[in-house]
Amino acid sequence: GSADVECDVLVLGGGPGGYSAAFRAADLGLKVVLVERYATLGGVCLNVGCIPSKALLHVAAVMDEVAHLGDLGVDFGAPSVNVDKLRGHKEKVIAKLTGGLAAMAKMRKVTIVRGLGQFVGSHHLEVQETTGTGQATTGSKKVVAFQKAIIAAGSQAVRLPFMPNDPRVVDSTGALALAGVPKKMLIVGGGIIGLEMGTVYSTLGARLDVVEMMDGLMQGADRDLVKIWQKMNAKRFDNILLKTKTVGAEATPEGIKVQFEGLDGTKSEGVYDLVLQAVGRTPNGKKLAADKAGVAVTERGFIDVDIQMRTNVPHIFAIGDIVGQPMLAHKAVHEAHVAAEVIAGELQGNKELAASAFNARVIPSVAYTDPEVAWVGLTEDQAKAQGIKVKKGLFPWTASGRAIANGRDEGVTKLLFDDSPEAHGHGRILGGGMVGTHAGDMIGEIALAIEMGADAVDIGKTIHPHPTLGESIGMAAEVAHGSCTDLP
Ligand code: FAD
Image (cartoon, rainbow, N blue to C red; front, side, top):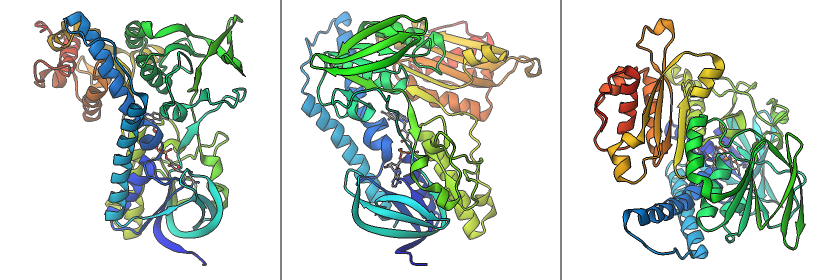
């Protein structure tokens, strides 16, 4: 045909899914073209997601820690925040990482085509030139011909239809831009993204309200863990509106006036300097002209795939946020490796690679708040709801020497083991959760234990270094096994 570029594999989208797929495919010897509409690689995660939020959350966590030190006898006085400099720190972090990705792409000879891609056939993608900020121009078009394709076009924030178009109404991208610190901020949606941004803004001085339709914040995590988080964070909030819908909003000179309606019919209203919409993310599946390639897209914009990440069209794969929940970067990366390996295996006649599949048992979730909340696998609330018999090992950090020394003993580590009759009292670990400082850094060990099929003895007899917070995982296992007699 009349293609401008030809390749073995086209990767559409340069986020964690896309760049990981492109790099793995290139490492396996394939000729790879990566199409990305923005000037930098990294997608949502590096540019407007995981990484910039953590750059700001790190600063917030240190500020909170320093504030705690007053109780331990060391006072630093009131913080003085230079928002411009803080924003600059965040920008530098992004630039360093996206620059690193560009260098890695070059090293691997991955061809990057900047522009907005849309399918024009089952083996062709048309790429419309874009500006650095991702907007399509009337400039040149290129056609990429591919043998196989991996769709990694990600997702975007959901907008509430009634929210006024006003700089005081933002999504997570707008919140991360950190234009300033409002006095009074509303977070619409009490999920991880909203609460992480709320943590940053409240530490910088904003008062928070949060409104959530469900009956609790941080859905997905066990309620006992969230309760501890909420107790520690109570002082950040003026109002926590649960079982409440946001039903209207208008821009006024005094602020954004927002109307709420409780599921019981109660009506209320608030006025805010900043409103963050954090009500979820929607996949970009409907914007790719996927039908031109024969790829089926669901009503909501997702692309269904099998465990090899293959769509309904055998030579086209999809990965990351666009294939479904959980919308997390580490899930996208693992799916990316599977898709790239299957493709390389098929193109090179390598049966082992071609058999690659996504069969992770569990995917961990982390709220990088203060304290952090992390969970993986079966939760206790799920076990109860599904009638699964579990043995629980709960280790409160009030018994952890390290947590006490840190002045942060509010945490809890919980492990759940199979307690069905077939397990004969030696059940494997099914899930775990933690709330406490650095919980996110420790949850990977519980994920590993689940993947390895460990039981409580395996974990309890593994010698953890003392005194560490991670030791609490071994202790929780001993509690479950009934051999925990000497708490530190
Ligand atoms: P994306 O990162 O969305 O990348 C898709 C890319 O495709 C984008 O660069 C887009 O420009 C490009 N694209 C789309 N359509 C086209 C087209 N037609 N042509 C050309 N290019 C196109 N996850 C975590 O695991 N940990 C976290 O701590 C975390 N924090 C987050 C914080 C925030 C504020 C947000 C919003 C998200 C966070 N996430 C986090 C989620 C994480 O960012 C996503 O799961 C991840 O980025 C998904 O990767 P992806 O490759 O599927 O898609």
